[in-house]
Image 1 (cartoon, helix red, strand yellow):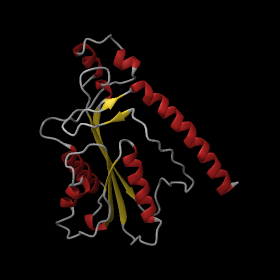
Image 2 (cartoon, rainbow, N blue to C red; image 1 turned 90 degrees about the vertical axis):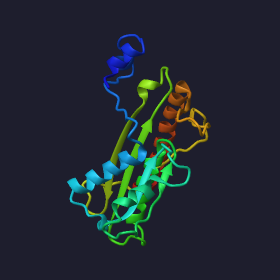
Image 3 (cartoon, rainbow, N blue to C red; image 1 turned 90 degrees about the horizontal axis):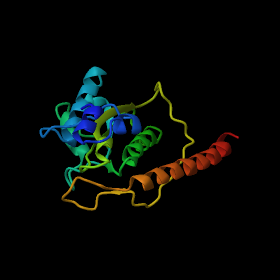
Length: 214
């Protein structure tokens, strides 16, 4: 949907979402889609378009913060795409940890390819989320998306070994109610936490990079 249409629907000031938040459109799912179905579509399309066989995948990691089942992970559901090929030897899990879940899934896959456990096959990372908010100011920042990343040797994009992380226990965004898909959000606190995390991460990165490369 167009964000300027949402401004009209919400009776918000013209430009509040489009100019103020810099938004143009927002993706939504209907009642026949969920986190599992969009990930299945993403992986299926990715492998077909890039001629990647399910037998070439040795690790499958999913990063998301959308929880559909308290036990059965999205990664387990995606294994249905590997059944016909007979490939059940696929490591990996679903990392559920707000935005960092996908970053962690990516790092796990890179570490696997660089480790003694790597068996020569590709790792596939799926990053997906359905962000839904209640009526109010946060709703136009929601949306849905799914991407797939293939990790392996001779890649066109190379990750540097020097990297840093900043993790802290804060309550700007969390979902304490298991019966509701809506989070509790403190937008102003989120901005402060984000900027602090960027500064702290960059400081640590500089220290690590200088130590590694001089």
